[in-house]
Amino acid sequence: MSARRYAAVLLAGLALLLPACVSRQHAAGPGQVPTQVPLSQLADLTLKVGDQKSVATEAMLRAAGQLQGLVYRIDFSTFSSGPPMVEAAAAGKIDFAITGDTPPIFGAVANARIKVVSAYDGGGPGDQILVHTDSAIQSVPDLRGKTIALAKGSSAHANVLDQLDKAGLKPADVHLVFLQPADALSGFRNGQVDAWAVWDPYTAQAEQQLPVRGLVTRKHKYSFGIASDKALADAKTNTALGDLLTRYARAAVWAREHPQEWAAEYAKSAGIDPAVAAVAQGRTLRQPIPLDDTVVDAEQRLTDLFAAAGQIQSAPHFGDWVDRRLNATAATP
Image 1 (tube, helix red, strand yellow):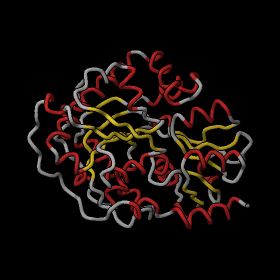
Image 2: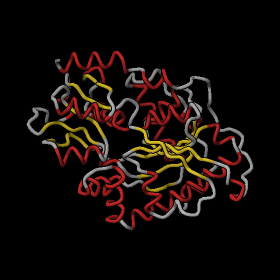
Image 3: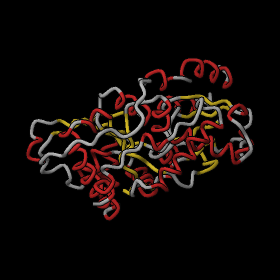
């Protein structure tokens, strides 16, 4: 099958995947903040946390010793990327997850019952647009008419739009094929797509194992912790979230201060080569930062970019999906 036909078939079925799955009941604006309870009252609580290979929330917490002494239980679920975690949080299937900068935008577009509750810096250099070493594509303008594989609503989606915009191109000038990383890798390896936009550790893995080169690298991006409205409205779950965010902030500092030890643990968790893990975590390690106006404004600009590119119908006011009640807790180890 040709790259163009391959793109057309997949786009027809997948283009509206996330908005169709997330509840469209309006959920904007922070809810009423329940009174926190003593941690000693959380013995009967299970906090449901989404995780993914690129974030490794559970692995980092465990490696840093931050899962010790928990009063409540944590049930971790693994997802392929951020958009499915937003969907799960909106449906109340998970309470919390850490994801890239783009999935919360698509959640806001779909009026998902979620809020952004924490922010993290780092990870931009791992977001790249990859091409085969022998490809004639040498710069972003050369992507005109080419097929690019990426996960819809992911940070890779944002990277592609940003790079196209800087090069004076529009999404209509290329063929976007929305695929999760495993399927995108298959299509890229088999020559069914011309370029693959992805993030670490997939970028590092491809660099180590395939004849590829990075066409362009994203300079900077934020990551976010999202929580379901249901979790934020419950006093016990809200309390556990605050405790978890503090533990994660400590774990992130530990990982930064013990890079070799963390890379080894990350390799085991993700099931990847230690050399790949070292590269990925060396440039993609997320560190907690305040969820302040600078961060929210940057996310609004990204939201506006998606709207201007015709990837969403209109740009929601992103601040309506931000809840700063746990800001001090999340940003302070």
